[in-house]
Image 1 (cartoon, rainbow, N blue to C red):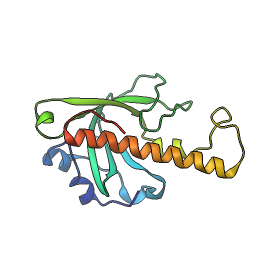
Image 2 (cartoon, rainbow, N blue to C red):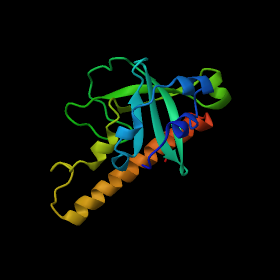
Image 3 (cartoon, rainbow, N blue to C red):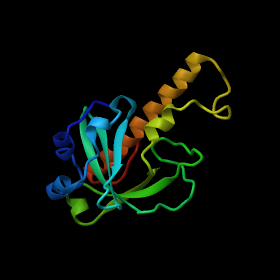
Length: 171
């Protein structure tokens, strides 16, 4: 992911008012490992139910306001974006107001994402022996590239659906 500035993120909200975008508490952008991320996700420290994700969509940043539980339930769920379940890491349900008129009427769409937004790390981890039974470096690299591409496609599809106000995400 290319490094982003505060202004780029604040101007890229697709489902929040300008006031909501202005009030959003951004992470310390200088400390973000941009080269290891496929999207930027964070929780607002002042409002624990407010979460945000910034995804590259058609070459530009697109940021979503998400609402989640303050303390997500301790259940193992399959993340809809990285399609991973890793011991010790939980996925949580998030709801995004739709963009445009549909969102202003209160319509939302939900998804399940890693609660700590660690999808980029999950798709880059070495596959377990159960997932892939080979030590061929080329095959392992291909497997990782496919997981990264899938994460980018699924996260962009969700953001696109929210931005269009349809709430229907597909590949």
